[in-house]
Length: 213
Image 1 (tube, rainbow, N blue to C red):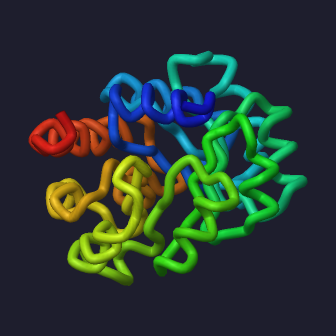
Image 2: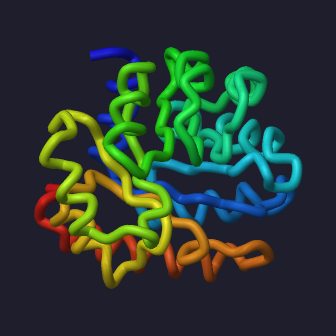
């Protein structure tokens, strides 16, 4: 196993859920992060189109250390990867398959977005740690299940886009190892207490997915 594979495996064992905090501000990110971690999460992603995202990533990385896999989403360039690495982030999530970005993420957990088997295999060949089906709500659990027939069984797959506590089990049954949670978990301006309640609802739903235990 590579270092990145180990990092992701440890995080997945704690929780299969990735908190996507699009639009979060640095002055609120620690309170929101605390609420999410208290609900049992172990992975937090701050998309780079959020206000001052590198500062938020730096604050989270320092606050939680190696216990939580913190990083960035919407990573579109090699420069983005290096900036996230410098901020202490260890998770690189992209909406697309950019082979240069994946290769630059060596040593970090790379989760590029894919939609077709061609994209999935190109990402894996470039060195992706895992894959995210994105946008999942533009597909279906049946679509993911069909792809799982050809994708390597050991590759962690995440469903991202439109995942809710109610359909989480359907994605797991289709072959997803985890899920990325965006607006169903956090919207800009949402209070930490409300985010924590939504995070707990997801954790409760994930605990009922026997495939993940």
